[in-house]
Image (cartoon, rainbow, N blue to C red):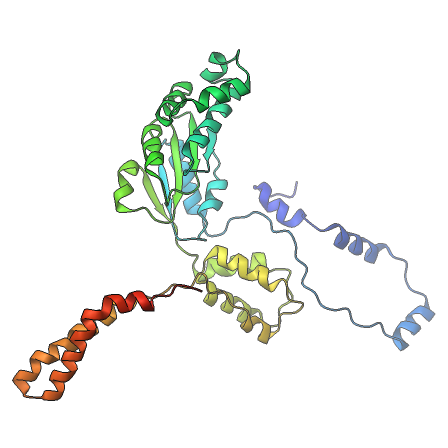
Length: 346
């Protein structure tokens, strides 16, 4: 009725708090003031209300991830396994929750206790009317089936799941396989030809790449400046800000376009009554800022200084020999020194 193609877009405009809606209706329908009431209000003005930032419920929306989301949906429709790779907070879980496909969806949330997750999948397939398990185990109760499942090992559970569904009938979504266990790797290797698997990970170690050979990799990065400003404007459209340009630039500089960091920083701003210039600059978020590893710079610098020890023989300069010798000693001690100077606490 509002002309939007997406239901979520309608929610952005339709979600109005009840109290605010009541105030708006009262402002329109209230009876006009008498002349003596207007005179009294002019002579005795009401105290100014304290400016507060109202925290509205955030609507579920997607900014800057439409190509990746379209790629995910296309791969699922083409029966292609996909791996989402990106740093913390870039929106992997958000995309996995917004997958739209005609295929049935199963979710595997816990890869550490993989046997328990497989048992939950089997119980779900048993309750599905169209699966083979619904016909084979129709005379069993849920408790009896649960006991039967617990006695099986992980490999047999995988084989039971494979025999219970049609190939590529279901889409299996795995939220995080960053720290995947060896048992979970074997499970995915067995299931990847029966299910269309879409998984997320911050990174995958080189020794763990064998089980995702036929996965198409989609890399997620931080939002660019324009997309970050769109997200900031969407999340902070109800905040009373003194300097919006400073507000937007400060958030982008602190978060480097990381969607999760942007959301957390704006939620912190919502707790302030008024966002003046000083308050905007005082609130910071360092979680998304990249850290620079200076190890290689130190090693190269010490190596160059060490060469002065040999250069001093040609130039007959004892001072250069002393500097080169000290650099060589530091080069030998650099490993324990780096371990001691490494940051251990926030």
